[in-house]
Length: 147
Image (cartoon, rainbow, N blue to C red; front, side, top):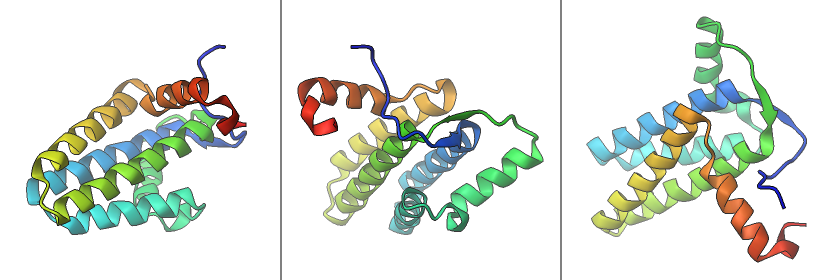
């Protein structure tokens, strides 16, 4: 079986999603620097808006589209499945950071933030999706759960 990302047969602009990733990285770094949970709450709301098809209301997506247009960056269409999976992971990481902060688990917060930033940086810089690799492994372990 060849390694694959989840497919949903809907196209999204990978350039915009990479700019979205840059904004998420900036948000997580801002949170780590300020310890403001409001930053995490804004990120969670934004992830949820994008996941549930409300992209026109997502501040990050609005800013990303603006930047793409202003810089005349190319449109690169890809299947939305991997991007959607990454958004689910991003939501989970951000919720975990928020909960960890609320309960005072500073070491866990640092660890989760480090993993999140590493995965996001791989996507931003190289287009490498760690979520796709996790999906592939999970699909091999439990194939019926992904039909």
